Amino acid sequence: MPWLEDTGVSGGVANVERSGALTGTFFSRPTVEVARALVGCRLIHEHPADGRLSGWIVEVEAYPDDDPAWRSWGAFDPVAERLRMTARTLPLFGEPGRAYLYRVHTSWLLNVVTEPAGKGGCVLLRAVMPEEGLHAMWARRPAARATHTLASGPGRLCLAFDLDRRHHGADLTRPPLWLVPGSGATAVVAVPRVGVRFGQALPYRFVMSGHPACTSPASRR
Image (cartoon, rainbow, N blue to C red):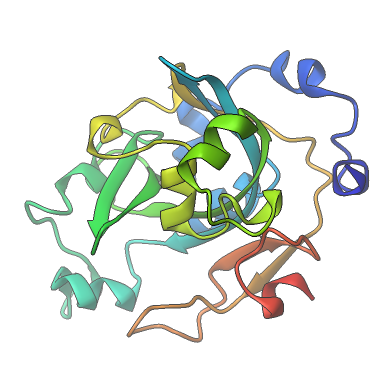
């Protein structure tokens, strides 16, 4: 695929995996920093029935602890100007590198917990370019227009990778659901987030420049 060559990861899957999974230290950094670094990394799900499902992350959104977007959850402390710990947000204050899944309508969304334990934050995975397990992904997303749309959008991503409440709290630094580093040569662009009521103008959405699997034409410029 040409985009793999452009981003410097054309050396092959084996070379990427030899560098090992991302560690908790990677995720314990500031949320915005982690979000940018996740673009170009590889999401892998060792599925019990379908084998390996994998793809390259091309779009994410950062939600740091001082993000006004938490107002939509009723979890933003206006005095401290920080995310407030509630029953819903408690896992976001836990160990970095854990999966945080929640449902919007009928769709599940996959987030990665960031920051040191005790400080809330997460990164939403918005789009992945599928690589392995395409047959299983097409079976779950038969209405998709093309391979690059199979996991384009956070709900579609979880559907294609068969992720739901079963994976909430999973350790993303090891199988069966894990993240592998990219080459570090990916061209990343920061753009405003979508679908948020507060903090819309913050450039906390990070996309792989020009990639067709990104969720909107503006992301692909």
